[in-house]
Length: 332
Image (cartoon, rainbow, N blue to C red; front, side):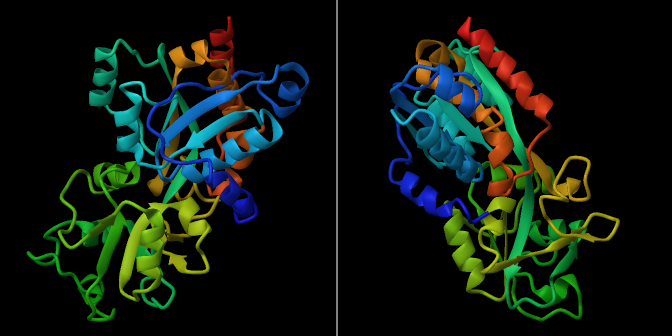
């Protein structure tokens, strides 16, 4: 997980939250094909959205700019899934990353702009993520919890009207210390996934401290023995020296989130979700660098190869092949 971080730091200088998308890329699907067959391209590709997807997309961008098209600048932001769509819908982005699927109201807003999902906008699943509950390294009691315990502790009013919850409220032999709840804020698809799928759209505890930056959440939990937070597996995997993951019992015993257990048909399925990127297909037709980069993202050298390095489980090869076929049609 850490082996590409040094390179990513260099890329981060050019990878930021950017407003307007004015350009992007074109090529053949793999690094070998691109190097031998594609012409040299230039211009920009503008990507923003999910903070969860950011490490994966930034790593893909770094590989693309280093090994495939050094004349193209791929700028990757991490404003959050919802914030990304707010830029994508009016045409400010080439790609919108999201840690949850696009919503019906967002589709409607696209259609108001003359953009239809499946035609003007293409949806690509990039990989699978495991929502991970993290606790402080000094927490010796909550290393294993049931899914029901996690849901109940985060639900407003489950234990007290003021939502001041103690560990001993969950299990009587746990410390009588107040739990400090943390999580990403409403800009993030991770918050929406947790609220909609895990909490079933019931109110979260009023005492939850929600943050924009995942690095802030890591810092807060690492400094507080009574803290608990949720975010994507990738951020936990790159911070295992500071945090520990709760092993979640979905009914058949505690399961540790790992790349071997995260999957829709694997033991961590209860907290598994796909992550996405959305392509403005009209821009891809107009700007060769946008199309070229899109092809690289779904090539064998893109998400399929780099997902595991960034804390995601890759999808079957057949899924990426289907996306490649969709992009080839844009070239015709």
